[in-house]
Length: 255
Image 1 (cartoon, rainbow, N blue to C red):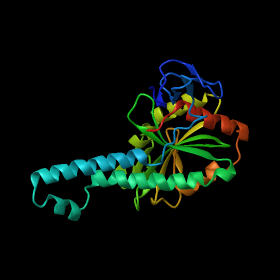
Image 2: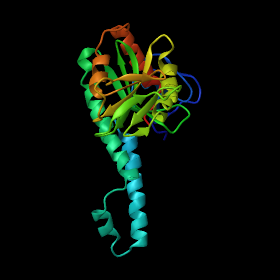
Image 3: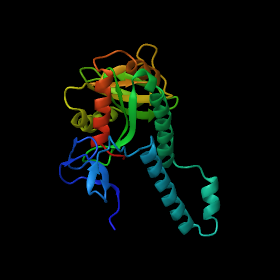
Image 4: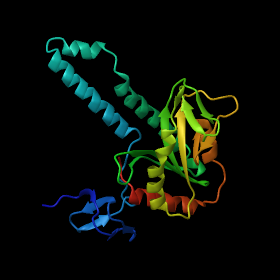
């Protein structure tokens, strides 16, 4: 007997509920009984903030545990219990926690015409989009970074282009990494809707004058600045917000 489940759509298929066309590569609910698809807007494939980062952290922890027990068969378990996690492993758990905190803030803005979806995949890439928030000002593509206690600032070298620095290191690559995320969201909502990429640093330190800035068209800020931006007035009506939100659910899938 065929199984009803989420699956990738190979060809353009109509949604059996709303009639919208589901594009190839999207993930939709396949109803085995009726042999029809239902799009992600009508039957959302729920994704949870921080889920993909949490999985990577758990996989690295499991791999380290296996290697440690193979090398130290007698005391391997004790070593795993007493040793601190290495930074390359802990960073994924820290990142997942930051994404969950950001999601809580975004979801708390629902009464102010802000809707959000979390941890979606990027087309043609193993990367993910931490959060997509739709507000009156447009669609915000948000990459969350947990940099507790580290100074975030914009530096401009002599005769050079502005750079993003965090914790004393050049992190401009974080800005460049937003291009594919923006492309995925723009494909979903179309070119008539403003799409705004944001790198949001949680628990970071900021210069006295420079708590938010743009680098190469990407906004860099903290959660409070982002919250104010999301709740400002803008060109999108409540109906347009709903349409964009449904389009994102219809054409993206959980990471």
